[in-house]
Amino acid sequence: MPAASLRFEVVAAAVLALLLSPVVSAGQHDYGDALHKSILFFEGQRSGRLPPDQRLRWRRDSGLHDGAAAGVDLTGGYYDAGDNVKFGFPMAFTATLMSWGLIDFGRSFGPHKEEARKAVRWATDYLMKATAKPNTVYVQVGDAFRDHSCWERPEDMDTPRTVYKVDPQHPGSDVAAETAAALAAGSIVFRDSDPAYSKRLLDRAISVFEFADRYRGPYSSSLHDAVCPCYCDFSGYQDELLWGAAWLHKASRRREYREYIKRNEVVLGASESINEFGWDNKHAGINVLISKEVLMGKDEYFQSFRVNADNFMCTLLPGISNHPQIQYSPGGLLFKVGGSNMQHVTSLSFLLLAYSNYLSHAGARVSCGSGGSASPVQLRRVAKRQVDYILGDNPLRMSYMVGYGDRFPRRIHHRGSSIPSVAAHPARIACKAGAAYYASAAPNPNLLVGAVVGGPSDATDAFPDARAVFQQSEPTTYINAPLMGLLAYFSAHPNPAEWGDD
Image (cartoon, rainbow, N blue to C red; front, side, top):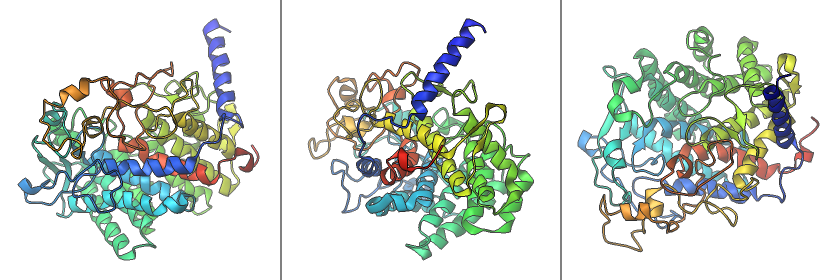
């Protein structure tokens, strides 16, 4: 065997042992506390008029005239990261993943379930406003280039709040179908607690999906100068159409969506890029979501999706499948080449956990062909290892969640967190005046509790804790969204010894 191959095998074996170890934490993490903080983070990302029960008090009202120039009300919603733009594509994905966590692990949220639902509703209320006009989806508020040239609090922002939309003349099947998925998933979340709202969400999801499917095209072609390079759709709109149909099928149980999925499975590429899952690429999520139907014995019609899901799971297990795009650091962190690595860690870990639960209920295992098989417990251990890494079980012994543990990022790439609050500095801080706070080596004055940053982005487990390195120091809503479900599950089931046999 060549020396390079031998080294790879040794490293893969070591990482596999680390990931699947029954005891991975030096001490028991307080997953309930981390869950509470992961939800609290979303209050720091709120746009619009803040409610009386707002707990992150250093934030104030912002964006109160969003949409006015276009004659629509687009107040509310979330800023996606450390800037002051409202990007509809990642916001919709965030809402979908928050809802999926509540749908699958709702009982595990315990006392935090209501605050999690409020976090979902802050997004779905906004998405309802953004889709109020038939055959139109408002997909962005704010000029990203102008916004990114400033370092200012959302309460002070004076850059153009330009409104961007997709319509029949400027299609955006990707962002529209993701919005439909978010509304459909949200309708399931509120089905019992607010049936009337749930129905409105589902009805809107149906009409938005019809628009997405009828007027096909990528929104990054229609709105290229506005949405690129921040949130271009690199994977195409086909995956979002399947994803939207899958969520509409789950929410409505209508046969038409079942038939749509099967009819378009090959045409829309269900088996492509199965090692990806995030705001841009939904392929792995589609296969895991639809596989539940097969594993519950409800629909052999979708057996091919279960095969795709198995193949995806195998790529995440070192030593079973040596997939070139899935790697682990020496400390055990899953990483993919590119920025903001924690978005991959939390999204892929959520799929591992969700699929492990589907398998457990069905008494099934993952089939990896000649590589063997993997049990649901093995998948769960890998997911837990990633969560524990985020919370502090890593070579630096630091939490990548702000406010959790004794050591965490203090200089996150986030305008509102890094500039003195309105309470501390009532006078306006202009666009360029904020640059001094950006360049400062001092810790951020406002703690964005629960924010999970991009984290280590390569194989060295290194983290600089510097605002300027935004790929590693910037938090995003779509990092936290799938983490909520993971933390809820592990708060209720923290002991791997109680998960069953491998």
